[in-house]
Image 1 (cartoon, helix red, strand yellow):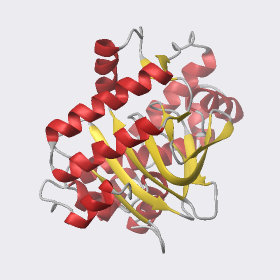
Image 2 (cartoon, rainbow, N blue to C red):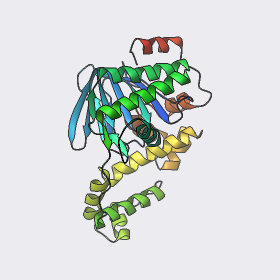
Image 3 (cartoon, one colour):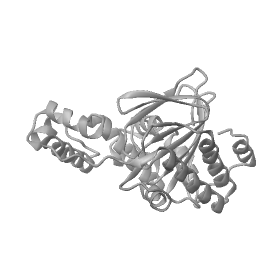
Length: 292
C-alpha cells in the first residue's frame, strides 16, 4: 500500500478483460519516468497531479483527465500539498482502436492529442466505470467504458504520428533495446553494448533517448517492472519474479515496482488473482461518493 494518508488499489475485473483499473489517493507519492503498454485515462477527483510529458510539466486538477498514449514516457507527482485523488482506466490499444473505428472518423492509429482535458462529464464516466466494476456489473462497465473512450476520442482524439524514417541512430537504439530485453537479468554495460553494436557509448545514449524518451538504464528498469507484472499475473511469487527479471532481491523489486505501478507487487498480485475477494460494500459506497 501507500504511505500515511495514502491508499491505492490496482486491479482487473473479468468483465473488462483488456483494461487495468486503479483508484488512488497520493500525497507524497512520486512516479518515476515510465511508460505503459496501454492508454492511461486518469480522472482527477480532487487535488492536482503534475506530470512530465513530452518535454514539459503539465497539470490536471479536479474535473480534468490526464491522458497518456501507449509507450509514452511520463512521470507523476502532487501539484498541491494535499496531493490528488483519482480513478483511472488503462484500456489496451486494440480496444481503443476498435472503439475508434466504430464510433469516430479517425484514420490511422488513434490516440489522444493533448495530455490534459478539462471535462467533468468524462471524469464522471470514468468513476462510473470503476463503480460498475466494483459492483460486478459487466454490462454497465463495458458500456460506460465505450461511451467514455468515444467521448474522449471525439473531444481530444486524432491519429498518432507515423514513425519517422529509420536513421542509423534509430537502428542502433532498436538493436540495443532488443539486446536489453534478451539479457534483462544480466545486462551489459553501456560501453559493452555500444561496442557490440559498432558505435560509441555517447552516440548510443543519444540515439536511445531520442527513440524511447529515456536512457537505457531507465528503460531497463521500466521493462523489468513490466515483465514482473506479467509474471505476477501468471502466479509467480514476488521473490521469484524479482530474480527472474534481474533485480537483486525482492526489496529492490518492491521499490521500483511501487514507484512505477503505484502499489507494491504483493498487493498488486492479491488484487488481480482469480480468487481475489470482492471489495467490501464500503468501497462501493466510496465509488458512489466519488472517493477512490
